[in-house]
Amino acid sequence: MNATLTSPRPITTNQFDSILSTVGNTPLVHLKQLSTLTGVDVYGKLEMANPGGSIKDRTSLSIIEEGIKKGDITPNTTLIESSSGNMAIGLAQVCGYYNIPLVIVVDPKANGHTLKILKAYGVKVDIVEKPSEDGGYLGARLNRVQELLEEIEDSVWTNQYGNKANPKAHFQTMSEIAHNLPDADYVFSATSTCGTLMGCAAYIKEKNLPTKLIAVDAQGSVIFGNKPKERFIPGHGAGLPSQFLDKNLIDDVFHISDMECVTGCKKLLETESIMAGGSSGAVTSAFLKLVPKLPKNSKCVLILCDRGERYVDTIYNDEWVAKKLG
Image (cartoon, rainbow, N blue to C red):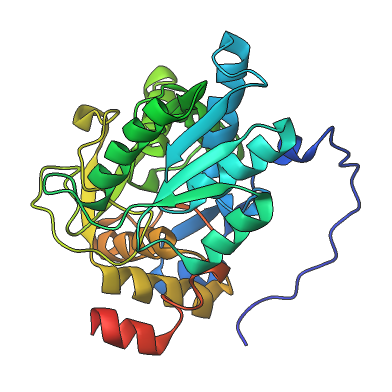
């Protein structure tokens, strides 16, 4: 047992106006075992500590409150979004609080645990059955969103893929990282819409920080111009290009396989007792790949996007891994 004993935390006053007030200001945790193992100081930004369990809580809150402020979202509005999981839960939470009807378009790869959560929130789930020829399941979901906008009166697409309130939310994410670790040398961020990536990039650029931003994409994702191929781990990579991505603001990119996502998740669990989702496994694997090239005094931050409980039947199930990825 190599871990040092942890003293009890002091009691602090943490009284909030609502569940939505607890979104953000997530812990930055020193990953001591992984740091010892690699010889490089590494920290985890625990986005699974958001109330809905993922970094998409930030995105959802930002988009909806911006829409309410502008008058685009009213008590009579029905919101529609395409999601592979976490964004759906984030929206469900915010919409539940504001009593806004929500329709989520998913595909057959949607996590069963996620669908049960959406049902508990009273969200209407619309499932597309087949991928589109030029955009995969994401393209099919987006096509269905457009159909629903025509069918449902007073409906609005939250559009996490193009809504500028998405990256705006993650300007704050990077602000928190910089506040808690001013001398961070590298930040690793998984890609999908690229909202997190570009929000962090905007903060780094505005504040003229020396921090290098590492994009972590999925093998089979088209975000950085690669050819599409079938992927089994949701929430990481995309079948269509990002509307936010500015490659000039990225210092490096790693393409991580589904199996590397699994091994990264297991490494986090074994070393730090952190049970995280697939994109967190991806950034962990990307970090381990870059370690040999890093100066030993480097300080790195891994943005750990969501909880792992939703993946107990997939990533953390050896039979599923053997069947799908073996």
